Amino acid sequence: MYDENIVAKAQAVHADTYGGEPTTVSYAPGRVEVLGNHTDYNDGTTFSCAINMGHCFCISASDKPGVRITAGDIRVTTEFDPSTDERLGKKFQWANYVKGVFYYLRERGVEVDGVDCAFLGSIPMGAGLSSSAALEVATAYAVLKHAGKELDKNSIGILAQKSENNFAGCDCGLLDQFSSIYGVHHGLIHSDFRSLETYPVKLPDDVVFLMINPRVKHTLSDSPYNARRASCEKAAAELNGLLDHEVKALRDVSTEEFEANKDKIDPEAARRATHVVYEIARVEKGVQLLREGKIDAFGQFMFDSHETSKNDFENSCPELDLIVAAAKAAGALGARLSGGGWGGSVVALVREADAEAVRAKIIEISATKDLEPTAEIIIPSAGALVIK
Image (cartoon, rainbow, N blue to C red):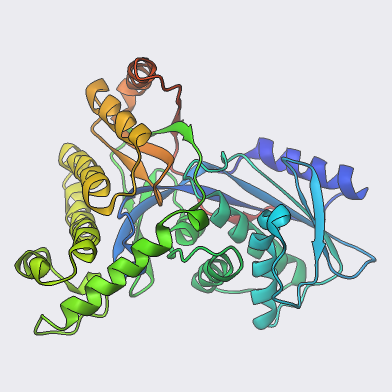
């Protein structure tokens, strides 16, 4: 499943801008992080799903050297040399996500030059649904198709992550890219970021997700994201000197080991690690809960996740906290911030039969707190693909 409407609009933007139809078209979905917040770069595990919103990327050959790229939502065009690692300025920061992919594909022998490109997405920017990863993955799929080359899915994800790290300035893990690539219809993706293995986990047929966006925009490259990552690495390094086994990352620390040693390490690093260590444990216990059909208990893990996000990792914000509380009061089975945090959206787990009523109640409660969120039913969807 892909967003046919956005694909049609993207192709129209391309034709209108460059005077001809694109010869290559790809699509990559955004994602919802269901459980496993900030665990990816700690070698942990996550639950996520691709969603029914995404980015379309179009390419056609040009008689001019370089890459011309048009952002379809703002109808702005810029160009770059794909062979250099020079970043574009702040005015065209959005193009760095694309340039990084072109640049790192060249390192893999995929040299594409002299092309016109356009992209358009249905993911609200800054909503925490990973619009940047969807753009990176869609770019990679399109460039590979245009060049007649292939890369395995893990390599595409790692390349897209490298682009965001080095060209956009955000030290993100692989969660977003893997979710966009490995999405499955009506299922979650369990990803292990040490082994880089993924597998689908079926959801009960009678549940869906709500994505509630309080419309508080965030940009991870401008947030404390990188500082939180540094704190996690500090905690792991200090715990490595205290435990009787090697600690390469917080993945290597059990909740019992952490509780016995957290007062012996840097207090701030310990608070950040509290969230991550318990989050990794929640994901692994959540696998069994879903297999046993214990969806209420799984939902409680989502509420627990938000609590440690708010109190220990401090990557929430008042608006997200209000939305989570509203979701709980409205009868959601679980709810938590989704994504890096400091803005973005809340994901809520609900019975399909109750979805509309819960959605309406969340909006009603939010209005009493001077919030006007959007709330949509999210369909877990298939991953990235080449359309032509």
